[in-house]
Image (cartoon, rainbow, N blue to C red; front, side, top):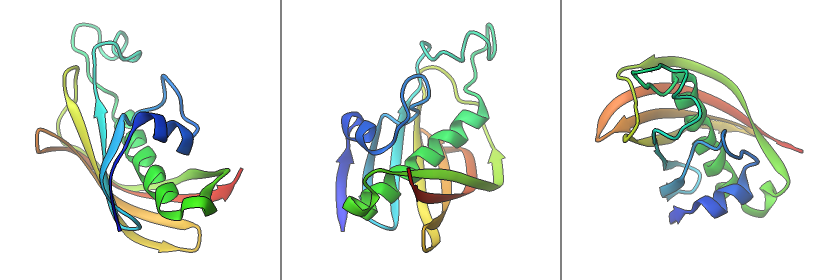
Length: 148
């Protein structure tokens, strides 16, 4: 089943993250149980830019990975529907992580997540972050959904 778009208001009902740590603005192209694309609009107003780096703002790689994990969590919650209400998705591991190009103000990250496998409450995803179609980061992310 395909869902078109999940808005920021819906995302905030699905995962507990809030500013400044909510790193997904919307999710689109959702295929339940399979894949989705998270969107993060990177602006100069991000709280990390004054210190990373003064005069040459670069989005920290760990926050790109976090945006991947949040996109995965949103896909898991959307896929599970009512069964996922009141549960949290915990980031468990990251493998095969590579950063290819810096991300800065004015960029729009498109975070492509595709289920690699799932067993019980553990899901693993192949993730790619792209800016204007160019790969900027990739990783294999594992997450677990658990009662809160």
